[in-house]
Length: 356
Ligand code: DGL
Image: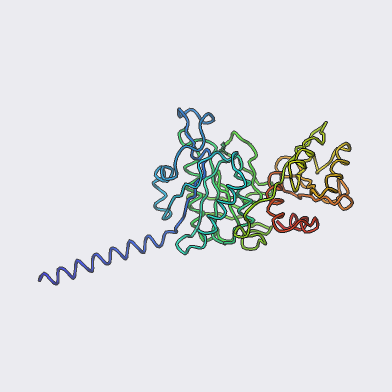
């Protein structure tokens, strides 16, 4: 066989292999993992340390390298945006994260995004992104309850599941999602319900679905406005108004509420007992604070889903107060802060609480 013919055969073979590899790579979705810290990046001294460890230690490239199976599921790239425990998240972190995601979702070479995050405020970040990111691409927030150094650590499978969900077409258009413990929850509804179990996250109205061995099984869809149907856009938000949460109990006083008002809060979330009730000794102070221009928003401290209706426990129309509906106090804070970037009108704010 002449040299030219051999060269042609080698060239054809090399081209075939290249096309094959590219086709295979293209068949896999492109997923960006944005790492922010938390237990999923935690490290303990010993494999028996499932609760005693330091969060926010392991860099994202090491997290990815620790799960070789990821490469078969997606073309994965990691970005280390922060390396902090999530109880230390500030509004500035939410804005930086949201703006980075807004850039990435516009890229044609990005099919989905995973955010690794501490579990303490994961539910707040998930809801915030659900309100302000305008994209149908899957954005999946994931954490872990045990550090990767512990026996039966949950982070590896949680992260693997998050990547497969983020890369799947059937996760598009469902709002921001949270994958923990094989469940797929809505970023709006889900909250950390217990702080010592791997089954830590619950949605009061149920999970959206399950992810098992890389396949999604859906049982319900979000009912509230989110992402592309949201009137809020991260690209138009450069600061978040101050909203504080005052936790109610028996013997509650108005000291915290007045202190928040003096500190410049634009709204105060009343983390109420029961159905959003307000102590008779507290009502006059909240009426006074409203007259000073501070919004009073009645939420419920009841775990796994309060349900606060207007004019039930209190005459909200008379006092010009707002109800948070089914949002827990920390979610109500997020929505109030985002809503106050676009309106200070109490009737508009109440509409927003019904719709989001
Ligand atoms: N410090 C907590 C946090 O970063 C650890 C909890 C966790 O990530 O599971 O949220």
